[in-house]
Amino acid sequence: MSRREIREQIFKMLFQTEFYDEEEIEEQMQLFMQELEEADEGKRAYLEQKLWDIYHRREEIDAAVNEKATGWKTNRMAKVDLALIRLAVYEIKYEEDIPTGVAINEAVELAKIYSSDGAPSFVNGVLAKLV
Image (cartoon, rainbow, N blue to C red; front, side):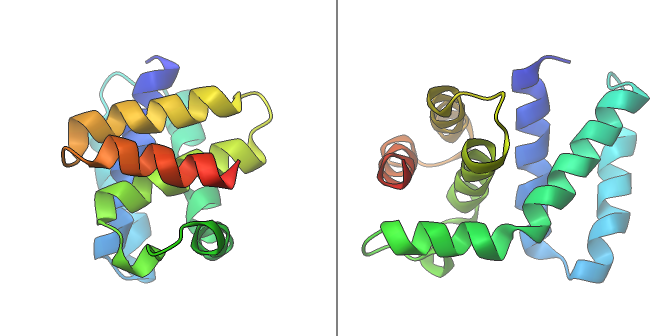
């Protein structure tokens, strides 16, 4: 599983967290992990750890986004776009081995696949204001 594929799986799990109560998320994560046939235990542990890190920092991440995203607070953003932005902000702020440009580019590329036509430029604009 490549870094891009890992990032995509984390995005999918992060998106799913928007639809469950906190006490249900662990069970949903386990169900999601069962579907990842090609991921070994190390990659599964990495996916799970990174998702929990992002999930527990979402208020801090959202505050940073809300400070910079004029006219678009996180509570008004499409859930797909918000999940992509949270993932990219986490990578920019907390993962030193991921260059800022890579985090932004990957979020934009995933927006092209999973969101609306205007989402890539929206995601890019929000992330650009943060950096």
